[in-house]
Length: 157
Image 1: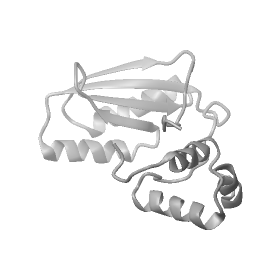
Image 2 (image 1 turned 90 degrees about the vertical axis):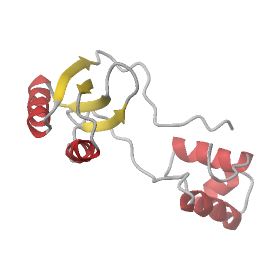
Image 3 (image 1 turned 90 degrees about the horizontal axis):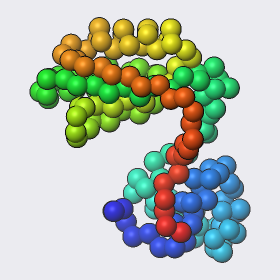
């Protein structure tokens, strides 16, 4: 649940920005039937509250020579705060890691990794296991085809 109240216009603004963050303030205001000043105030309020974390360009991994998607599941017996902080710091500094989650269930951690090819994945894997002691099981699965990928959250417009 967001920590600020979002009305229908706020949600429409969010939906539009998720589809195209390059919309001008005027175009955004017109699309939600506002003038620019109230639209800007809504944007500023949502940015200040952290609802809008940033505005980015989405890149095509394949066209950039990074077509191999790996999902890496990790088990460990290390659960101390110090180990966790060290592990998190190492992973956050690895540009191949697109997403990193602490999990409930059979595996302790899950990573989404994007690389050029299997040779690059192997180099990533070796850097990971050499940098982080205590990993007892590192299992990787490789995507054959992306059927759906989105960064857009359902904002119930």
